[in-house]
Length: 336
Image (cartoon, rainbow, N blue to C red; front, top):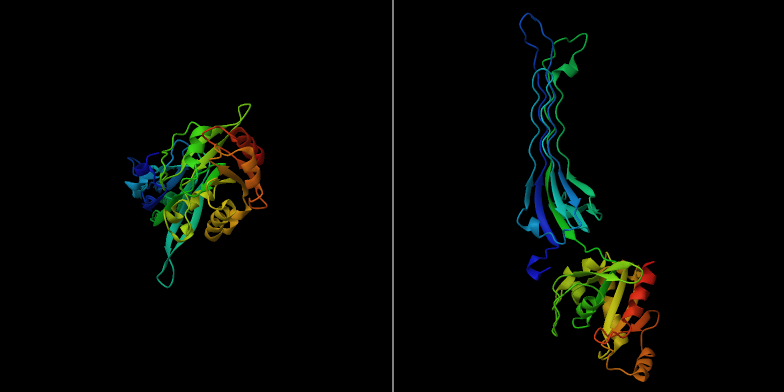
């Protein structure tokens, strides 16, 4: 995923189709002087539907297709011929897409109304239903009204603006400051090839990798852009990346061994997540101390005593391979 191609937030305007009108037709044939009502029903208007597609990773295709308008159903005709239903517009979206409708309140303000989310391949979410077609006049024939001249008009469609927001689906999310070694770890434990360099914000969008454990088992890991203090207020890349952490089952906190104070760095990371969404604290957490290839066993034991309490920790090095298999096994164990 190139930085310019990753879009995780888009606003679209959609309109479903009107239903076709029913027909008020009467049978007219040679030698049939008084043919009865035979007006057909109108066709259904097209609906606007989101469908989960596993091969999609971004909402960029909607950046250039912000207007989605379905066609109207066709009108009914004689001989009880029903009008043709209009085609639904089915919009492919990545798994983890959340849809909210923009609605105007009584005081003129706007708010977002939750519609639903798509989390599985092939799952569909109807944003707007197409209008039903009107009934033809033959439906309204009664013993006392043998020649109804009335047929139903088609039901109107609906329209509105929607915010589509992608929250990346992954089993394990990497949480850490810029340069904590998240991208390097992902490149070592999976086939993902994220951009890696020694400066802040190398990663500007989530990268996903499949981590193979043992016996054919695997899980999905997401490298999420680095947190800085004040991120929940929009500093740095701000809250843009935080929504992706909400989907992860396990949070792997990563702090570099050369940090001034590992326990303090962990608390800052935890604080940013808490202020963004306190429910993130309910997720399983594990701490990886990274860049440990230059540390000897005595120094590692000394550092262990200074780590924060209440969280399991593992010392790793993506360069030397120290603790990598142990980390993968532990994450798999937690996920089970």
